[in-house]
Length: 161
Length: 242
Image (tube, rainbow over all chains, first blue to last red; front, top):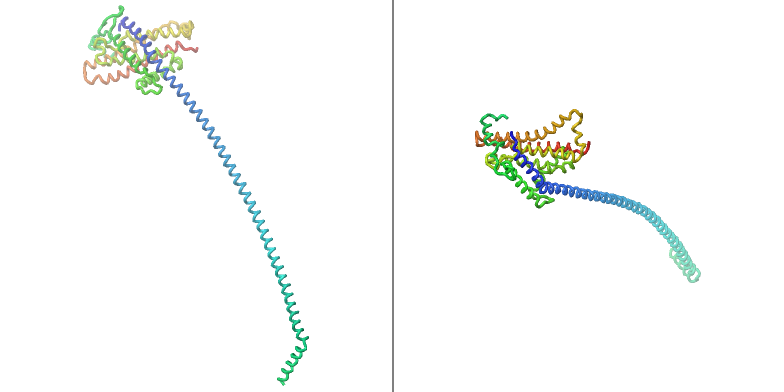
């Protein structure tokens, strides 16, 4: 277990030279690269995170807007339905009133027409009666008629007897 | 060590990690042995791997080498952070601690190469006390250096805490730490290599394989333990609060 001083000095010198060599050619480049990569990854992850957050925000906004729009649309539909319902009832009511009016008017017209027809008929009948009576009267008024009638009558009686 | 019977001990002395094959040559009066050349080889391989992994860095990594390196460093970093008391601290001392782990792991595994410890120029560096002691000295010096650097002269207050008469014990503890670090690493790796070598000497075929597989596990554990302890020492010394 003797120590060779030459070997020892060489070991120290060699080691220090190796430290210098490895520091220049291995540690600095590799550790620097690891750091750079770490920073790069970190910044990219941050960026991605930001982008995701932003996207989430936008999505939320859109969702909210969409919901609002849906609610609004529902409201519009409800309103329109109610309006339509109202107007439907109104129209039906109006139509019923109108139809009743028309029916009443028609009935009135029919009644008036009937009345008129009756009056006319009555007048006609009266005229006819008068005419008939006139005719009867005219024949009675005329003597020959009278005579004829009488003779006719006598003849008829005479025949019987 | 259970295998230290005379025969194995002699064998260990023969091919042993401790003595190796002796110095190969010298630079500026410093002898270059097999562990040093192995370290150089490992450094070149580690440099090439690092270079190839980070040559064209991609934010979305298709390069498998880059992926693997990222995985290793990130795992290590995640282990270090809680021990050091935060990612900031872990990042500050990562070059030092990460290099401990990587070099020790590579060194431990270099002992599994064929011919390691037997052929000249190739021997697991962490299987010699000299190398582990060198690494432990780096831990020792950097612990106190970073301690003074962050806390100033107030760093030395912890030697008389919680009670002043514990000063000698505290000082001993500071010196025991590198000793235990180096001995633990050296003992484990050297022992593992010796067991493999002994088994190989007895039955060269298949029998050493389970031990070599265990060696892979031990190599990882020891590299991890050394690094975590170093992190703990430095982290405690350089803790900014209290």
